[in-house]
Image (cartoon, rainbow, N blue to C red; front, side, top):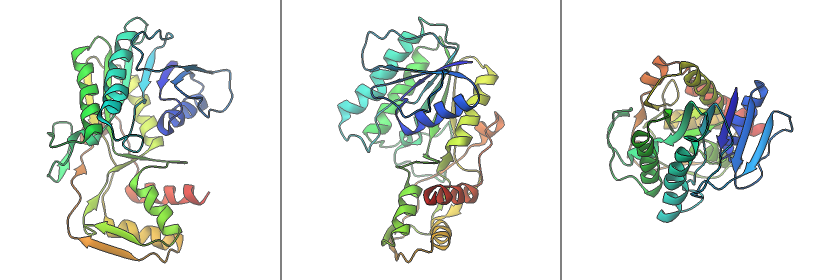
Length: 285
């Protein structure tokens, strides 16, 4: 199958591309900078800025839209709107001129903002999202305004896997390996807000195989929950860390993720404990 993957130079985009290539798919990667992809005749890279209104895209069967600006890359509202919202609008318009039959859009649970409830799913509301969350919400809305191409929207938490840099768990592992003091809110709070990139990839392939029409939204996370203090205990034990854990107050985490809809449609997430052990092993490797 012929895939078009945006954000080819980013962590998620490059990981998805390498997995597709391992499965012998043909992939065209789009990004503003050269991605680190293993050389193969099945991969073609094109330098593209999705913020360009006059996009001329190559033909594809499926587009996996990973591109975007994250909070770690900018704090400016205009950057998020330009690179997350307007870029998505330009992409959708350009794809209408190709034979693309399916779009997978990687959104974020950040669209829910500071929602104060135990669990969130596809029907949950939004409360005071940050600039990043707003830009992702606007981007999602574009697919409902332009439903010409079947689209699956996946709202992601932190994405773990080899070479991951930004998720909270990755930062905690690195800090504990360095025996740094860890400051934490709500150590008794529960957590399942993570997905392994391999599980994400398998779910993407599943959604492509379903071939459903219209626009569908999915929230995904780990299969099980752990308390924050349990996560720290596992990391500390596995790394031999001497880090001091300081609880700042008793606030709990904002919410947990309900993946029921995604699981019904073929999402098979790892247990959070397994995901955590994999990440610790990846960091040691």
